[in-house]
Length: 499
Image (cartoon, rainbow, N blue to C red; front, side, top):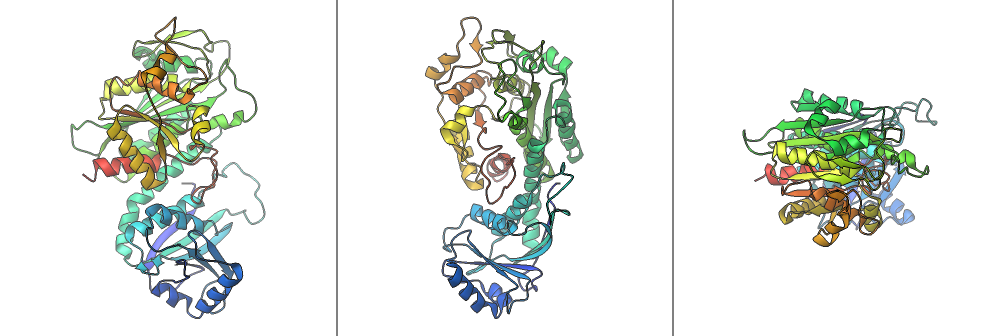
């Protein structure tokens, strides 16, 4: 993993090492073990808080170097705000805030996992630990020269002082694997496109076999035999051959129908013949954020041995312009047999998903399926970078995703579907066209996808605003966010393991 931070658990009574982190409420009160660790430094905290106008608001930090009367090289007092109503996402943020103060180089930190009312619960401790690791993530493997103080990179040995060490360790096993899944997704999205092309992406996904995941890679001949003309049409202008990868985790009851997650994997998107403007085209290396999420999710589920049957499927292509590239006006035949008129070759992600969705619906026959795709700029205009757009043909599945989004902070917002939008993609030459124009662009894209789910309960998540380039947060300072891994892991856990 590219995350160079080690998190361990020790009793609350343990002596602090290195940087000491304590939590206070909005009255600056700390817990009993934290007060003991501070010793004579409590008065110092009060004076420093008054001087810095620190009020203990949620996520606020009072940073004291070489604190007098405290056995620590540095003291961080993190505000938890009002003691009531705190949620897991607040503790995730607290961990991220603490990690954000580490800086470059090696460091040792002791975090007192305690509120004024007493020791944090195991769930709260796990959230803090996850936040620490998520915030510490960096992608700098291609830097040969680093700034002063960064030569060795960030390395930290962090001890969480907790009320129940055994419970915290046990709870963090699964959560740690989910964090690993997010890190994998971030790494994939951050990789340059000359390194991560369809064949290499498929090779990396195949490494899931080490965890017991069954992986099948479909090459161009296999996809031609299946009739995947929509997906293959996107990649036909690239020197890099396309791939589809099917990943199966059988952790549930034998014979029980799986649930399925499908990811758009356009490893680089020039727009094809309908070429994009040069400005910011380099960001299109991240047009495989949906596929990256699915691979990270499958890692998390397999590593924590999820008690569920899950199939992940990703379509991997490059959308390049050359003499063999598909043209506006071409008509392709999808695996479903439905024909598609190509209006704009830059509306390519839906073509990839069309064949993979149909494959999953017909070959896997899942209880439900969720696809993720950096599909439209229109969704960014509509929702910004705070929510992914969610479209669904099933109210129960939509509600489950909304709940999981609130629980994890990977938020979704439901958008409409309807026949009035669907008719906008009817074509005079084929069964449909691949774009319905500017108005309601994210909606007509979802209507297009719905034509390939064959009635299976389905949700589409347009993650164009959340998978990459979103504003930095307390738990992510990277260009790639790893959006969706925690969301979908929670969906599986809440509804297929905690019955």
